[in-house]
Image 1 (cartoon, rainbow, N blue to C red):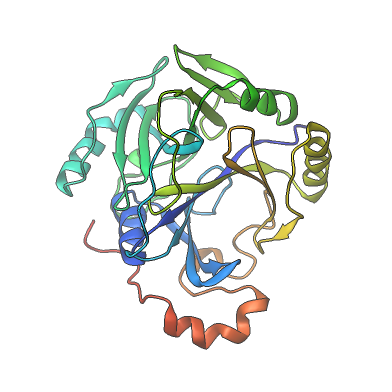
Image 2: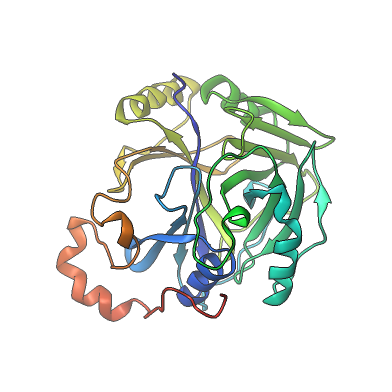
Length: 317
């Protein structure tokens, strides 16, 4: 069995909490599967968006620090685009939906075989794509207003800009169970399998400015590993590859190890369980503020300082 099974989640630095909820649950129609706080800085929310269950490979998470946060800059050494997978038949629906809510986007383009995509940005300037394809058998979350057949199925791929791709590619292929899936002039797609939710696109951008962290940028990308044992085996491989990493961190819904890949992007190895229903019923995921035990004594303080949000979002129905 491979130690890495594909993508787990992407975590971004964002601004206004309500706008964040509005965009990902309203415009895109994802489910808010967990409303908690940053486990390393508890005065900021940590939102998790995904499919009905919070399945690894469908999850987008955000730290909404507020509108006053300085904007970041897309550039090399960063993960600049998170792409979501949608049925190839849904292109016209999504063009109309984005027009309906005045969401700017670039006109559809083709990439590789049988793959059309639209580039857009969320309300914080985070780079996103909607990728329309016929390779994805996952069922998207039905939120009651986006048709089931047109719902987002999960993450399709992530796009990393680099001076050169070779060292990051070596890490992915020799230590992280990836193989080369496709390539064009400056884009190299790797994956644990040739399926959406398992792709990493490395793009060579030697002339681009270096990216800067801030509002509208990705903090890290997490790769899924089955369990604690496979995570420990991955740590051994990182050690042999000469990469410094954190200790195993308990994130309640999974455990995590963080390290920087050779191009400077923060990678995480996250276990596929125990999952998001360990402290809430599946039917009510995301409805209450859930805290790790270490922050329970601060609950009243956090309820006071965290922004008030309205969920579910009605104005994008």
